[in-house]
Image (cartoon, rainbow, N blue to C red; front, side):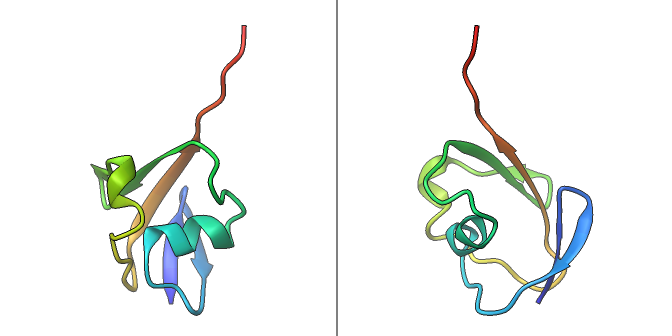
Length: 66
């Protein structure tokens, strides 16, 4: 399946949900904000929202600092 991740086309296999994608990208349980096809997802939606061929996804990791 080809997805566009942060502006870069990438190929994936065995993905079903956004959480699967985050795991494949190495984010796992890290705090992130996800936008799927220009729609921001609530954290509770990540595990149940499915991905499809051609989806455009933006992932931003939340970091704290001073």
